Picture 1 (tube, rainbow, N blue to C red):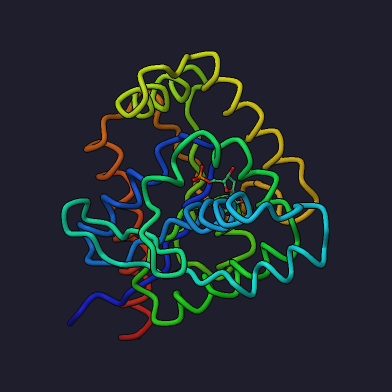
Picture 2 (picture 1 turned 180 degrees about the vertical axis):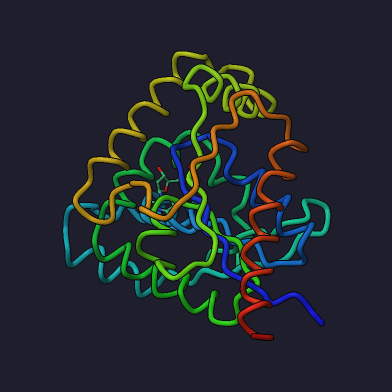
Length: 235
Ligand code: DC
């Protein structure tokens, strides 16, 4: 009997390794992986390119009508690239100009409604792992497995620094730390869907876990959930 497919929601602060575990799970389980943060980043890129006033309701609503987001599987990364109006912007959305503004854009109510509606449609068939800040609380409150990730702040700063340094050797640790602290602050204190742990989310601190240890832990939780569903179907 085939294992029933579930929805896996992964939330947590910036640079906790959410995308690493989400990607590992999607490969191991043959699930679709959606990086919801990439959607907020692509919208931010559009707003920056078109000088959209973030605090002007009419401009935001009008701009969103011209934003088309889609995902395209990239076999080299074993994950999907994000397309903004058919243009692959996966690399540009990781650069500092977008990182410095994305939390402000993600705090706008209309932007969240726009993104969440699309995210919910992607989960209709289940068999999906999505990472973000509000996946277990707002996007998929019914998800069978919710994980809330944390890691030591110093570990997170170093991880993000190494990732960015490969592309830009001008970047400093202080710049990265400042960006992470500011984003965490805005993400967890905003009015609209702030980052918070869902009551039924399992806490995963991966400061001292290898990627393999982390994967095995979460796969164990997936097995439990799918096993329960299978038992319910049989019973
Ligand atoms: O995961 P990330 O760092 O790429 O996310 C970029 C920003 O988008 C982050 O600062 C918060 C926001 N975000 C959000 O508000 N809700 C989500 N589901 C995902 C990301």
